Length: 371
Ligand code: UDP
Image (cartoon, rainbow, N blue to C red; front, side, top):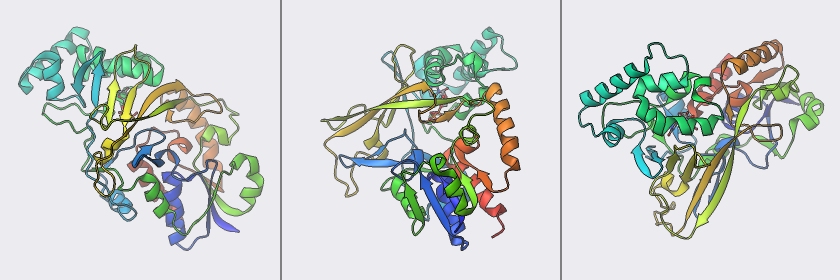
């Protein structure tokens, strides 16, 4: 008999399992995939840690979370600065003085601010009500048209007027020459890969891989006093109140026989004609070198194609708009009544969580446990 059955070996599950085990509890972790680490899973290809389910750049302002993860891995000094490619024109991201200079030829922060203000006024926006209005009021119409509109439409499969404004607020806007994509005190990629980090978190804990929870639910539930479920909350309830919407991603991976394809880890294709949203060149997360410091002769790239999720696909992004928010609340009401089950993580809480927030949420949940 286990004290906890943890369904899903991703970040939430790994933190919970570690804390419970360290508190003396007996834990079983299961995952339907044949590997641990959920969507932060990395796999070595040609000496490069490939982010198999999309790029993950760890960043946080939460010292507690940073120190917690540093128990299991060392982080390198990678700083994310994606490049936007709009029909062959390259722009710096996030939106900063390099971007404004390239877009408008402005040189000073005052000139940039005046240009944004002028475009915002022309658009007549006072209180932004959706992503489009929010974007224009933050960076003006030109940047919205070239760097946001097409990318967002491809990424979410919905026009910017139908998306919540918080999505664009993830990106900083700066009147300084600072290409760091995140406003975070701590940032980096686990040396040796995320899989290794999660492996260290799960050390000494029983794990069963390739196990479909719903295929053996009664049996598995019978083995544990409590269940920590990190899969999609609507799937847990067999979609009985309706299906929550997710975005899925398809990756086209290629090994190229050259050392450098795009000179950066992430290049976003922000026009609406290019079918992929971005290309990740994984070696640049680790400065193009293997663990011994040798330059790598080949490179691995992944083109990301975003699609609407349907049953059977892997869910990646919850679509946190009003409609889905309401449906989620109804599921949450049911979840709150469960005495035996804890729901957590991006899918369990239907929330566009970053990694650090997932770790923080799992640690907070552990603190609530009476162990
Ligand atoms: N975004 C954009 N253009 C870009 C990058 C991002 O319009 O070049 C918008 C887009 O709506 C995206 C959101 O900003 O969904 C958040 O971007 P982020 O890079 O945080 O997304 P993630 O890495 O989580 O996919």
